[in-house]
Length: 342
Image: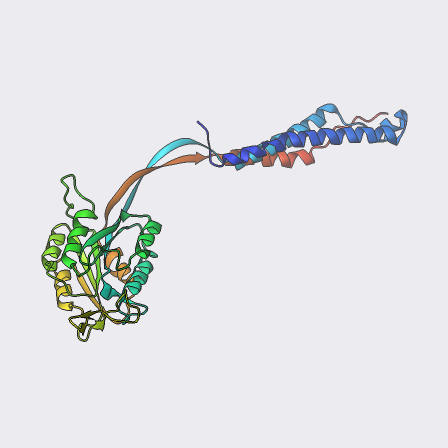
């Protein structure tokens, strides 16, 4: 069965009959010009008429040449084959703290917006990996399941605000457990399959509030998940937390201003609890998350994420292209067979 790669070009086939009509019209105009040029005796002597057969051959060559070029443009293909394609990569889930302390401005414009910017930098260099997104504060919400649709992922990322999580606080352990059980691909038994091709990128600025994050990290390790923990904010002085309901004011607790202070030790222990885990203490500095991806994630073990097949055809347009060009080359150099009178 013939398959056309660009069937829209078939509409240009009208060029072939148009070329035939134009040639017939030109022959008629030539004949009328001969009749006006001289009388019958002189006309045949000085301007022999073209033979009908030769003229027909030239017209046929022109039509066949135009048709050959148009057919070549439609990209005729046959010999259909199904070629298996395997996509390999890693599963990467971003677990992002969206608590109100992420509005602190020690990282401009604030910690949350800076984290989102770093993640966007990373997604711009993704190479076949699947990505997911979990937002957390006092509760965790899956904002994006594992997907290769980077546009959808970035849309979910852009919508992250402190209002994304239904409850305030910082429950790191619960967020890790949510990612492991609800985002990473599950086995038929409903549990994440073991394997060293999963990364959980944890981005937070707060102190955990009793959610047992190290124990959660150990559970993640059993499911083949590596944690890359990124800590934001100072772990010595902390930072005042803006009040989203009172612009220009800061949160207070029992009359004292609330300071967000990073618990770097706990985050280091969380990362250490997973094989190959890494803790990156960014503090109030900067991090090139795209380079972290290249160095730690892209170069790590990969797995088969998807097996599919693509349809491939043998391209045969060149046959019709050669026929068309040959006809168009021969047609103008083919001399009309003239009949000369004595």
